[in-house]
Image (cartoon, rainbow, N blue to C red; front, top):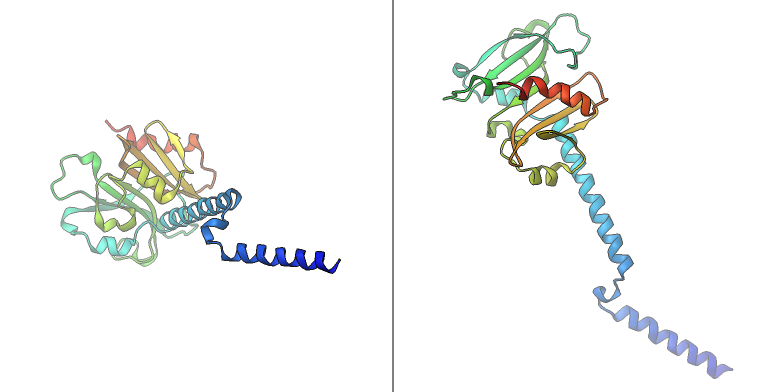
Length: 220
């Protein structure tokens, strides 16, 4: 009986030793590899969501962007707020538009624009650090936009950076998070123009996107 017990212990010892001495890749099973792949996918989704959330929360450094521009090639003015704009409940306030044409622009319909919400004593001044970004309309490549320099990127590049959780419409895609939306017009699978808006609703669907793109993409 003692001999049988010793034999079993002897076999068990060398079996454990054999497993311990195997190389890491020899220990992998199909199930283990599937778990690693699943973790990788979840990590990519997490990073995509972080990148998208960061862009939509703060797409540009507004004050830095404004300072980088030559004011001889831009115009400003009070604008009418859209009924879908996010609008803080502040009485002494206006919506204001900054128009940034390229230096040798030829198409007045493709001028980059920024809409802001301004209030208080500096609401009619260009140097106003309290203003709130409401909308971007971008038709041109512009390195001063930083991470929001999206014109010319491919759809594949967008998906790699922000993921594939977007709404589709006839000539583009739209990403959103809470009340912020990024609507990208595509041409030959590349970003032709885009529109970023801070909305007064978090209910963002295809119907809303269709209504939002009419003013921007139906210009003739």
